[in-house]
Length: 161
Image (cartoon, rainbow, N blue to C red; front, side, top):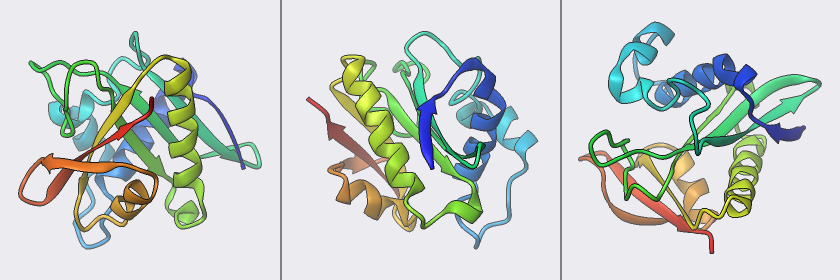
């Protein structure tokens, strides 16, 4: 597996990974790609990729993409689920189901953090539901819970610098 920078050509795959991130729980009825990309509160994570300030990484295995992680800045007027401040980008991460539990998420997280540091970004925020196994990964990688994003989710932040 290797990581590379996410480009404009990856917009479709990033949208697929957004759909995977939304549908993380096998207990829920799966939301369609169309529904995820038409809902304003989820579509704005990928709409117009890449916008100024966006950055991301794609994991590949045998030349095929298997996961992606990206950062996007939001405003207080159009916040993401894990909005902290306008100068703190929000992380989105998704892994192809067959590749989950194999270190792809951790590699993506570290890769996007490294690129964020290179870009001069000091903090990353995210929202994660408490039942999502990814929350343990974020805690292990130094993210801290800074508040409740909802009744079922936490907002987390990692200080990079």
